[in-house]
Image (cartoon, rainbow, N blue to C red):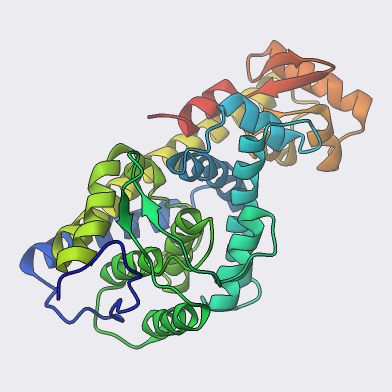
Length: 361
């Protein structure tokens, strides 16, 4: 019986696929991706205060992942809002910051609270993303359409069916398997998107699930690898890959797509981390040499939590009081470490080189 994209896909098969997926091409690509991932994992420890990496790269990912869903904000809006979350901001910037909060919540759940990837955690992620109390879809009528309003896919329907499929996905995530975890991640990502368990936020939740899966499997220690930029650059192939599995069980192209994305992204992220590490060292040397009276490791760390900071950034970090903080930032601007930007009554201090590293195409 042929697949009907206008009818709920309640017959969505459970994982693993009932077709051969560990082809020669897939295994070769998996070796390359694993090598790049291992090198990235090591590089993540170059920066002693790893919160710097998690904050900076996580915020960049929040922007990219939201952009896939046509939630677009500027770097200026985003980093100003992150430096001062009490500022008035547009709806798009608020949504991007909620993505950042959901990512942090998931990471903390796995690493600090030792939880596993399960349906309750999926629900928590999407509730943070959407700032709502929404849960698993209960009502019929969900259909995914293209820009011409043509139905491209109708996900499973009915809360009981959706929860059963999510439970089956949980079992696959945690089962002992001979599958390479990176291949397994490609399967999990498709399955989550095909179940489409929530009224909204599925794409962003699925991309958070990718990074949490890699952490749960021990392939990364930090949430520093994100596929969103790769997906944006290869968006047509992403959606074609999902559709071709659904319509013709074409798993190999999809798995190769994800593995190549992991390899490319791991290489690019490792390069970013090395550049950040070098910049932190260069900045520390410069400040210590030119401003020895204000230099401290804590001060340097504050300058790399986000490309934008304010006087209160130094206050909240417990470095100095407000008046002294203002003097510190002016001195850092004088030696070329920061650039001030006046916005209304507020003044932001921008680490331009850091910003360039984070926003490279």
